[in-house]
Amino acid sequence: APERSTTHVVLLACPGAGHVLPVAELARRIVAHNDGFTATLVTHTNFSSGDHYASTFASLPPSVSTAQLPEMSIDDLPADARAETRIITIVKRALPHLRDLLLRLLDSPAGVAAFVPDLFCPWALEVSGELGIPGYIFCPSNLMGLSSLLYTPELDRTTTCEFRDLPDLVRLPGCVPLHGADLVDTIQDRGDPAYPLMVELGEHYLLAQGFLVNTFDAMEHETILAFQELSDKGVYAPAYAVGPFVRSCSNESNKHSSLQWLDAQPDGSVLYVCFGSGGTLSTAQTAELAAGLEASGQRFLWVTQFPSDKDRCASFFGGGRDGDSPVNYLPEGFVERTRGTGLAVPLWAPQVEVLNHPAVAGFVSHCGWNSTLEAVAAGVPTMAWPLYAEQRMNAVMLSERVGLALRPRAREEDGVVPRDEVARVARELMVGEKGAAARKKARELREAAQKGLAPGGKSREALEAIAGKWKKAVGNGN
Ligand code: UDP
Image (cartoon, rainbow, N blue to C red; front, side):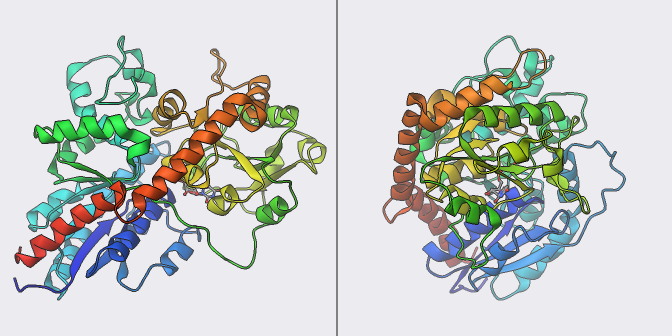
């Protein structure tokens, strides 16, 4: 191949806002921090309706192109199929289209120096491998999460019980020890169709030549060291801690109602409550959380979703119901009684802007990794309220090791966090000593993250190291 003046990297995001946004951010950073790079961000059509990430796409620099794989039908999946089953099914069905796209790009003047699918797309590495393109995995979550996914095939082979019944703690390299029940919820039922997909996923990670992980040294120091040791021994491909990638505040002029409301609140007084793009509470839990917030005496801004007694990530597939609002499902009289101190908004708030608002001092979070990193970037401590995916693992790490989060205890019998506990931890987070310590930690992490991403910082150097590799491969005509 002729020597090329630019290095073109193709990134692939699986369906879902929580996945597309960090991959877009990775694309942006690859071209921004490394001379002579261009990127193509490939997304799926499924679950991309709504405008949650239209503005992110619009703000990408001209050196990042976008391409969309066609909509894949998953109508044949059972109605109760897990989110991961749907995502992975879409990803697998779209592979022939991905292959066509990669072939076209290979034939174009830009060529393809490297291919970087995200966490849920490792099957795509078979396609890139067949076409001779070096393949990497981008993990928008942390290194502990990646380690657990890499470990799943072995855990599957060496045990027979459900993981929640494992008698011993699971010790992932350099990670806080975990109960089996805290592992990713997708692997908690061996009989679920998602289970074998997750085992396959872990196996396909071995096709990667490296992992780009949305984490940083101050957050996962021991884990990064332990992984490095394993990759030095050739057990795993190397991991590059290139994060944290967090969107910056947008300067949109028409302010969301939640920001207008925050403008009228005192500095450092508001607890922000949001369970990500998919997090859903049961009817009973919604009532207890509402009563707890009310009893805490703290000001709050709550992004509400329609309750579901079946599924903790029901809202993932789009929360809109014509003419109805989740605020209508809050306990009777709650909105009236808390008027003045609290605001419940339906479905969505501009989270990065909210977290960086001077009025916000605490965050009740589902521990989704983007949300966690956004809290860190804003220096805001959290109340860990994990719901699905790898969030329980994150909650353990953030509360037991990192010190960013306080963790309310759920009732043994029904898993509901009762109102007194909500009120107690909310007060502790906002005005207590433990909250102050977590706030200090959040600010330390914010500073460390900024340092790591600045020129000469560890995360910046990790991204430069990998970009250098890609560039060299192009220069050699590979
Ligand atoms: N988000 C937002 N407003 C909301 C809910 C979510 O802006 O009301 C954004 C949030 O800032 C984050 C992403 O959606 O960037 C959610 O990602 P995360 O990994 O925290 O959780 P997921 O939704 O994937 O479970």
